[in-house]
Length: 178
Image (cartoon, rainbow, N blue to C red):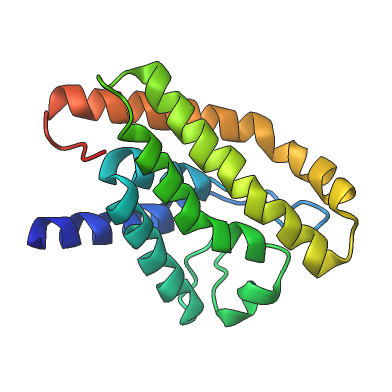
């Protein structure tokens, strides 16, 4: 139990550390950041439950005002901004990624990539796109097309998450909990 708490805290810190990488502002209020890589890694490395808990810890600290999101953003006001759907989707995306990891009979880069891509991209967008539409007043279709700017980078992040997860699992058997 104590080891799980430490890992949850470390992965919440990893998401925060990925916020140090400068964000790229988009015209519709949702920036491109490296933090979704952290969400994917939470799921691939910690599994569904602990991955979601790490993200929830990160979000709780952010909501309390700590400037942990890319660009030094923090506070409860973020939950009424265009990023709200993505923030709500973060723990669900980590959970789905970890859940999908559990279906692999043998850990592989392709299977891990698929889990990270479906959980960290598809699942996240299912929440992020409606959030953009709701807050900005844009039609859902317009929010969808605006969000497609994130896809190439997110595919790269899924590949990085898969590569790192498999490398860690090979170097330290038993460390990956998914």
